[in-house]
Each structure stands twice: as structure tokens, then as C-alpha cells.
Image (cartoon, rainbow, N blue to C red):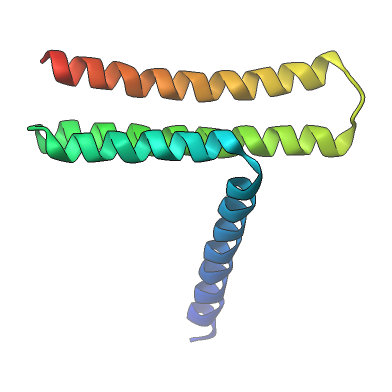
Length: 119
């Protein structure tokens, strides 16, 4: 029984920390708010058009992937900024790679929309 309580507590902590992370990023990251609006519009369109369940799931999942990538990019930027405010090629590379990750996730979502609409 103690094991189940411990796991439930751990799960609850994870939920709380995830919520706190979302709130912190929402408050400070305009791009997260923008991608959330794009994702909401994409989801609304996915539910208003005739699609197979698989197509709809792909669109919705890729939209969530863009949000996840944006949160990870924010985490990278914050960690780099915490370590140093000094300009450094490795810091720039880390931030640019995080940004590229968001761009690729968004591109994947766009490709999925093109393929679904063209099909």
C-alpha cells in the first residue's frame, strides 16, 4: 500500500510541476501563446473538416508536438541564460538548435495538413 501511495504522490508532483512549467512559459513566452492559438485553430479545423480518425489524430498529435518542442526550446534558452549571459558560440548553437527543433515540428504539422488536404 505504501508503494501505491508513493507512486500516486510522485505522479501528483509530476502533474503539479508540469502545470507550473506551462504557467511559467505561458507568462513569459509569446511564441508559446502564438503556437497555442495556431494549434487551437488547427484543431478546430481538423474537427470541422471531413477526415479519417487517423488523419485527425495525426494533425492533433503534431500540433501538440509543436507545443512540446516550444517548451523544450524555452527550457534550453532558460538554462543557457542561467549559466551565463555572456555571448558564446556554444550558447548560440544550443539556442539555434532548439529553435530549429520547433521549426521542424511545425514543418511536420504543415506537411501533414498538405498531405491530408491533397488526399
